[in-house]
Image 1 (cartoon, rainbow, N blue to C red):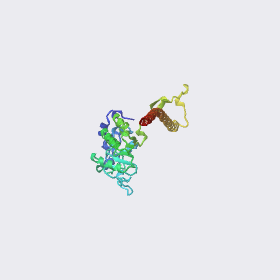
Image 2 (cartoon, helix red, strand yellow):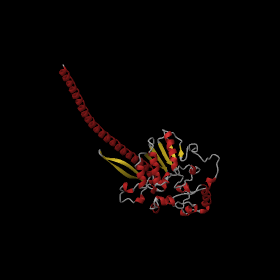
Image 3 (tube, rainbow, N blue to C red):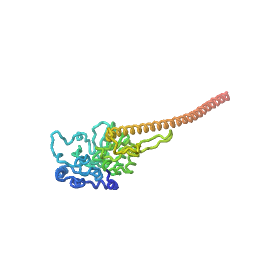
Image 4 (cartoon, rainbow, N blue to C red):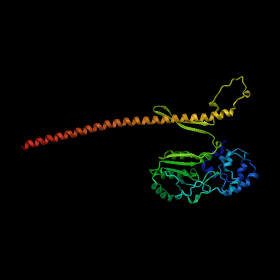
Length: 358
């Protein structure tokens, strides 16, 4: 469950009040320090423990195998060396063209704007990445801009890190403004885990920055387990009529009992009901189908709204074009008539002049 006391803090306060001590984490979750503490301390020296308190609030008390805990708790097995393990599993070193730049694919260009993360995942494949040497400074923007312009196939930028949403809104807005100045860029993807571990990070100012950009912005959320999500909503448009559309917000999960009222005869005690298959099996089958059906319906509604908007826009454009053609035809006819009148006048004047001379 969400710890709402943590949500009352703004995201900057939560980011500055992370748990970094393995002993504190184990004590909060009432776990044995004898079995887990020594290995956690040793592993944390190599890759520091870092986890928001709100995320810890979703972990099960007293469960050393909680899936959220296993993602962040340092373990002595991390210190084992294996010959097949490498520090650069994605081969990013060869794609590191300049400070903050990773260019592995022809049309995509990745910017590592920060080395900071709100949470240190123990499986992180960039824990050995030399961030200090690769953080772009303000002076580096001109070089980055020139590199993008020299590669006209680049049309998509990925903001990564670290986690780009640990940056301030001012800095995010600055980089988006810089990228918008390049006409060849069409898409901006932001890869982040922050909305999962510190949901308050998605504030009104950030939404406004992303919404008002000319770039097509895609926020890629990194979520690993269902326990990380408290509620799932879908936002889509519905068509009220041919001239009006409305945005709808619907909660998909968890399901509300009030939405599924099934009358049960009063004279049948509920505890006496035997369900076969079990209620759990039924829900495991129904819920995925329900979600798929709901999402499909929302997509159909949104698609219908899009086509209606296009039809309305084309109808308006056709009407405007017809009116323009009519106006231009009228102007053309007037100009043509004036030219003919002028020509006739000149011919008559010339004829009269010749007659007078003779």
